[in-house]
Image 1: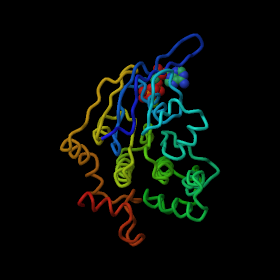
Image 2: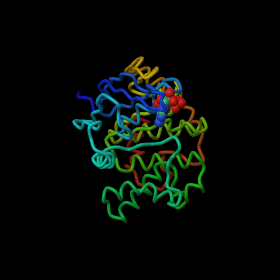
Image 3: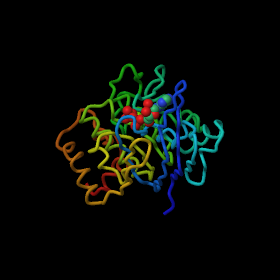
Length: 276
Ligand SMILES: Nc1ncnc2c1ncn2[C@@H]1O[C@H](COP(=O)(O)OP(=O)(O)OP(=O)(O)O)[C@@H](O)[C@H]1O
Ligand SMILES: [Mg+2]
């Protein structure tokens, strides 16, 4: 299988006054289509820098980033903006929601950029919020929601366009343990459901265990790049997610409230695939 993301000898040097900071030294890696990939490493090792170059949010100092056949490291700002809108999604640790828009309007925004008609994008935004357990919050502004709820809006906004790749930088960094697990599971299910390649930065080892591939960064270099075996992955996922089945959360994530949805929704199909 050809990789969907290819990174060749990537280097990123920041200048701070007269100082040079080598954030990425010489990084080469590949990620396959549909893979869930976690990028781990100590604080300051270069994880966010790497993710920003992969998503075309920053220009590398040297080296190449290819997504599919497109060399994004060689694109102009305008080309990059169009490419990101068409093919990529990004989830930020700090949510980055527009404060004056409601949850549904925030989620509908990338659909507007894609030219989806108003009524249809509203419907799609509300559907996506429902999958994130936020049906009742569609009309709320970000300041009227908890951190976990805002992050789920950010996740809905990234998934609603069904991009080829979603990048997430510590998406659960501000959430409590239970919400972290719920949010992680729903992202995983939606990525698998729609064949979306999902690349997530985390510094929590147990979260990284759910990935198909774990890339460890140290001092701006790839320290290791490991494909996780199926049995190990299943055990890691069970350790994280099984406790969620025992409780009934007040607002289920990626599980549709009883009677609210016909059979065959994204969440239901995923449950069936998992044989639950
Ligand atoms: N815009 C910038 N200007 C100057 N230096 C930067 C900039 N962004 C990052 N750095 C430096 O590059 C190195 C890598 O930073 P990066 O943010 O990628 O680390 P990280 O692995 O994401 O860390 P954390 O886990 O704390 O988020 C650090 O030494 C950091 O200080
Ligand atoms: Mg970071």
